Structure formats: structure tokens, C-alpha cells
Image (spheres, one colour):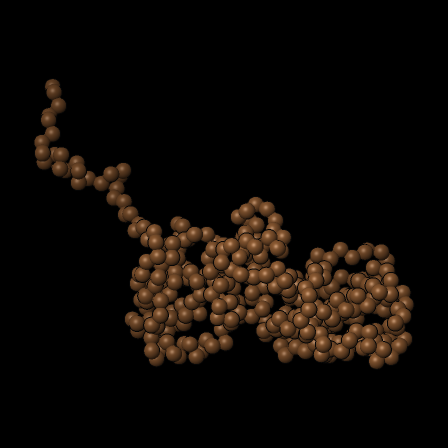
Amino acid sequence: MSERTPTVEDRLKLLQEPQFGGPRALKPADPLKTTPIVVSVSQIQEYDRNPRAARNEAYDRIKESIRQRGFNGVLRITRRPGQPHYIVAQGGNTTLRILKELYAETRDPKFQSISCLYEPWISECETLIAHLVENDARGDLIFIDRARALLDLRRLLVQERGMALSTRELAALLRERGYSIDPATITRLDYARETLLPLIPLALRAGLGRPAIDRIRKLEKMLVRCLKERELDQPVIEEVRQWFLLCLSRHDRGDWLLEPVQQEAEAYFADLCGVSREKVRAALGPADILGESGGEASPSAPVSTYEHPRSPGSAPELPQITGEEPPMCPRPRQSLAL
């Protein structure tokens, strides 16, 4: 028996049936160009690579202003491919956190849905660069936060390119991408993160900045140079350098000062050499000249990577910073004559 020819009603019914076993809800596509949109704050998350780790000093003032006047700005957002939520694309993490707090406290709709500018996703590197540029433009990023963000960015760029980057190559690449930073600044940031952060975390997180970091670095270089000029063995030079780094950690505090460190170094050298502190001070130079600008030299070896000799009596390993006063390094076996 021949099959019945489908009627018009049969064909309409087939067209109305869901395909592939059930209906499919298609997710709306994100805009392909910069587009103004209104988004609920619950759909936006802070940027998880945000360079700012320290709390914004103006947080309470900003919150009170938004509470009284509402949010009249525009938040720049983007979205990683395949992710359900938006993230802050360029600055604005503090603002987003405040809006979420205010909505949770008041349930006022004016804190729930906000005007945003959607930026199409480019890459992780470009988003982090955008946040760094925005923070640098405002000038409110503490030195160590900038140093840690730069390390994160460098790792992303190395992963993206599949090859290591020298300091000059990194500076040139960042300049091409709209983030102007010179090699000397990168070297200074590396020194703060690699050498100083394990030693004086309290001072750095309290906002210790470039002038003080330059002074520390110059004093360390002067100490090492003073020893090298007297043709001492490398293990002895490294032993004294390790003492200096431990001296820094003993003076770690929020209101950090270099002068007590230099005074302790002068006393240590005077005892080591059997001479007066005045003679040591003349060899090292006064503390108040250490902040003067000068040519950038290569950074000293960071504590975490320095390969010092392992012969008997050589410099000890730096201890973990725990808040307890670290021990003094032993006096070098080789005499030092000024």
C-alpha cells in the first residue's frame, strides 16, 4: 500500500517540532564593537588580575559620594570567551565593589543596574595592560603592586610569544602596545619585587616608593663596591651582603627609614675593620646623598636566585621572614682594611 501524501497541516506540524530532540536556547552574542549597554552589577565581576592589591585609600570617601549622588559614570567591561559573567575591562574595580556593597545594604535599584561600555575581548595581555595604563594615569598604584603586576604581565607575554624577553625587549613590546615604561623602571620594579619584598614586606605594602627603594639599592651597591675595591674574596663579599639584607629585614615596618639601617651598617663595618665609624661613613658616604638621581646600573642578584659559594663558612641562607628578629651573620673570616 502506498504511503499517504502529507497534507499541508502535516507539514506545518513538522516545521513546528523542535529539532535534535528538544528546543535550543541560543545565548545572545556579545557586541563585536564598543557598545553602550546597561548591566546588573550581579553580572559583573572584578578583574581577577587587578594590579591593585592594596585597598584604595579613598574607598570610604568614594563610597559615600556614590551613596549620596549615585553612580553617574560609565563602567568599562568585557567578557572572556565562553564565560557567563562580565569583568571590569579598564579600572573601576573599586567602583564595582562599592556598588555591590551599596545594593546589598540598601536594595536601591539605582545601585543594581548601571551604564557600561562593553569592550570586545582581545586577550589577557591587552586587558592587564589596560588596567595598568588606567592605574598609572591616576597615579594611585603603590610601587610593589605595580611591580607584581609587571611580573604577571611579563609571564603572560612570554607565554603568548613562546620565548623569554630581556628587559629592553619587554619595554619595547609594552611601548608598542600602549604602555610606556623604560628599562630602568623595569629594573627598579624587579629589584623591589625579587630582592626587597621577602625582606621588607610591611614597608612595601605600606607604600614605600621609588625614592626610598633607590636609596636602599644605592647603599647596597656602595657596600659591595667598597668591599670589591679591597679585593676581598667573593664568599666574604656575599657574606657581608647577606648581613646587610638581614639588617633591612630587622628594620621592616610601615614607617620605614633608611638612616637606622645605615647607622647599623656603619657600626658593623667599624667593628669589622677595627676603625672609627667616621672613617666608615667617609667611605660609604652620608645617607642624605643616597637619594640623588644617577645612572641606572644592572640590579644586584636577588636573594631568591643568587648562587653564592657553598664552601665551609660561606654566607648562610636567608631565613623566612616571620616577624622574629633574624640572627646576625657571623663576622667574615677575612679582615677588612679601610
